[in-house]
Structures are given as structure tokens and as C-alpha cells.
Image (cartoon, rainbow, N blue to C red; front, side, top):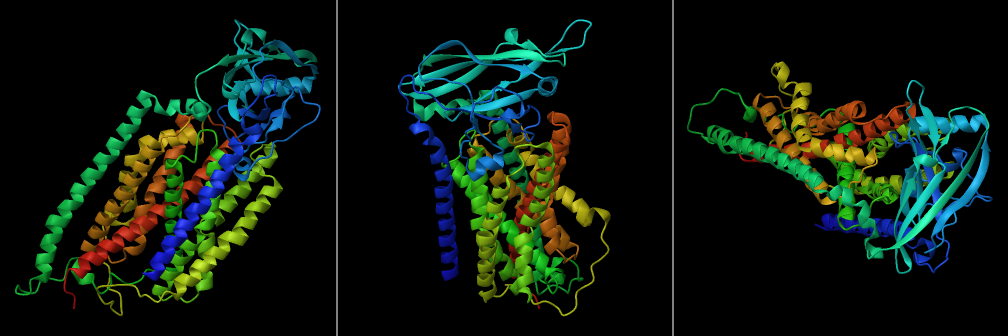
Length: 594
């Protein structure tokens, strides 16, 4: 009881620290620019963030990589770790927009574009480049230009040179902002020659009744459109039907098949039965699996990721994350992963000790690097590609050092401390039956009872329960849509956990019924196989549902989605193992074994 209470207290501490860290990020953003209060004629800060192809959200560049009108002196806005990970690089602009002051047409600058500058803008127009700015910490977007179709001629490249700002205010605060570009005032830059371009802007201020506290609700409306909510609820209904069918199927097993098995195996008056079925492998079913070091590391890492996901959902449900502050989500994932490292160390070392393992140092090294190692490798590849593209997605050296320090100072020491606590936990592995000295031979298995076909079946059902919601998640992470219905996503995740547990239990029973006692690794593979289906969906989404192209975007998409799906494999694999272990203990505890 003391160890469990200590673990609960540790989890509470992690939640409090995570809330403080993420709330600090959110508070820093909301309290910038003089707490967002202005007087008439006060200059409202406008920062340019980044530009990039609209269909390649990961391929972003600094705003002034294109030859826009540059300020006399560059002033970079301070950014937290999450914003840097998001690729934000905010810098001041020449725009002078003052509070509650309308402006007709103001001259920003007049420049003569060289042929090299024209080529840059032509490439931006051809690839649908957009720009992102922040006006009083409110995001706004616009396109650099457009392709103009002409009869019997090649398309013309039109560069937008005028931006109109429409600002809504309430009292002394900015509530809403939007920009418009006027195609009629675009400049033709089709010819690669010296071209004189005059950039201008205008501003219009209007009063609104929306309060400052509700100004971010504009960005949430897209997720709550009636047609979208209907699809989300259809996804939940689909998932619930899957759960009910699977529950009914398992109930049939428990109420009929298992009941008959218990009657047959516990009836001592009947003649001796032929040695078939799951009872007659009771001397092998609790035999520890091969590669116990790796097995315990998988369970420990999966348990940590499961706790991490629940913490993220907890923060999202209490309103810590809001639209276009995904930097807070990045920070939360990094902080919580570091602070929950003790969980993976404890679970892995404790299970490894129960299995008779003695090389616990190797176990902790494997546990600490099982997920972070592949993630670091993918990061190195993607960061190298981003450096080659000169993209803002390439992390600065200082940020890489900070992340490395967090891993060295926080993550790894907590993994070691958790491992020491798990190693010193003297509780033994509970097995209702004794294990024979020599393993029982496994009968020849038909092809559909082997590991790969079972994984396909085990992964398909949970994936079918979540695939509708996957599109909206992908469109938010790898697109420009907004996902804010965290309550629905949490329900879908709980359904995913339940379906994974149920289908793994069913497959474990069928495996034991044919006297195949090597269920340990099979339960992990079957539980985690949903991650492989999600990665398969990535190929479909990239090919048919998105317009992503290019080496950098492809590298980022498949690289980081591979890490996410690998994390789901570990997470759901640990769920499958835990569910199967509870089931196996239950059925063998209910019968009398010699």
C-alpha cells in the first residue's frame, strides 16, 4: 500500500508541475503586449512569422526569406520551447497599425526586384505560398500571390502587393483580425527581369460586442459546425457498436465456453479426459517469455506513454490548450514525458526482476532509449533535411542543447530512480500454477493461428473503431484545420483501449485452447498491431487525402508518424499484455491444477 500511495503522489506531482509549466507558457503568451490593452493611436504589435507551401505544413521558411519590405532593424520576439519546436520565428515588420485609427492606403515600401527576387516570388506563387503573421497574438494568414489563367498563353504569375487589415475591437482591446488581398492590385511578375513593385497596406477598425475572454472562440467554430459534429458522433456510435459486438462475443465465450470448460475441468467424478485444451498447459502458461529484458522494457515504455496520453487529455479537458497555441502542446508532451520517466523505469525493472533478470543496468539503458532512441534518430534525419532546405523546422543548436539537458538531467535520472525502486520491490510474480521444468511441445499451428494473421485480425477491429476520427486528427496535425473537440477524442481513445483489451483477451483464449502457451509476446504484438494499421493509413492519407509533396514534407510526415505509430504500438501492446495477464490468471485460478 505504501508503494502504491507513493506512486499516486508522484503522479499528482507530475500533473501539478505540467499544469504549472504549460500554464506558464499560456500565461506568457496572453500577457504579452501590455496585457493587450491599448489607447487610441497606440501602436499594436504585428509580427511576421513564416511562409511556406500551403499543402506542405512542415515546409516553412522565415518570412524575409522572400524579398518583402524589410524593417530598418530586426527585432525577434522571444519564443518558448514549444513555439520553437513548432517552427515559429517571429520578427517585426514595417507595418504601422495604430489602435482605432483607420488608414486608407499607406505606402510600405517601393523596391526594385532583381531577376533572382522575381524567381523567388514566382516559385512562391507557383507552390501556393501563404504567410502567417500575429497581430496582438492573434494569427492571420494570406497568400503571396496567384496564378492567372489566360487564353492560348502560359499562366501569368501575379504578386499581391496590397494587404487590407480588418480589425474588430471592444473597449481598449483587440478582439478579431483578418486580412484581405486584392487580385486587381496584383503585379505581374511573369518576366524574369528588374521589376519595380510598390507594396501598400490599409486598415479598418470596427467595434464588436465580443469580449476579450471569448476572442479565441472564432477559431473553434470550425470544429463545432453541425455537419462536423454529426460525423464525430457517427464515429463514436461506430466505435460503440464495435465495442458492444465485441463485448457480446466475449460474453458468449465467458458465459458458455468457459463455463463448460470449468465444469469439465473441475468435475472429478467423470472419467479422465484426454489431455487437450488450455488446462493441460497450466505447467507452461506462466513460463516467462524469451528476451525478458526487451519484454519488460516494452511494457515499461508502453505504460509511460499510456500515462503521458492520459495527462495530455487531462490538460486538454481543463482548457489548457487552445487553437493556434500548439506550442503549449509540444511543451506539455516534452515536460510530461520527462517527468514520467520514473514510471517506465519502475515498471520495467520490477517486471524484469520478477522474471529473474539480473543485468538491471542494461535493462534501464534499454528502457530509457527504447522510444527516445528511434525518435532521436528520426529527428536527426529530419533536422538535417530541414537544414538543407533552410527551413524554420530546423531546430537551433541552443534548443537541441536544452532538450539534451532535459533528457540528461531529468529523464534519465528519473528512469534510474524508478528502476532502483522497481528492483528493490520484493513482491514476486503471481502465478496460480507451478511451472514445469521443461516446456511442453506446441502442436503444429494452422496458418491463420500464427502471429501475423492474428495481428491483422487484432489490429483491424480497434482501427475500425477510430479510423473516422483519424482523418480530423491528421487534417489538424498535417494541415490547417482546427481540432478542439477533446472530449470526443478522449471518448474515442477510451473505446480504443477497451476494444484492444477485449480482442487481445479473445485471441489469447483461442491460443491457449489449442495448447499454444507462448502468449506473452503474442499479446503484445496483437495489442500493438493497431499502430501498424495507423501507419498504413498514413500512406493512404498522404497519397489520396493531402496535397503534400517534396522530400522535406515526405520525410517529416513518414518519419514522425512512424514514431507516433511506434509509440502507439508500445502503448497498446502494454494494454494487450495487461489485459491478457488478468484473463490468464483468472481462468487458471478458477480451476484445480496439480
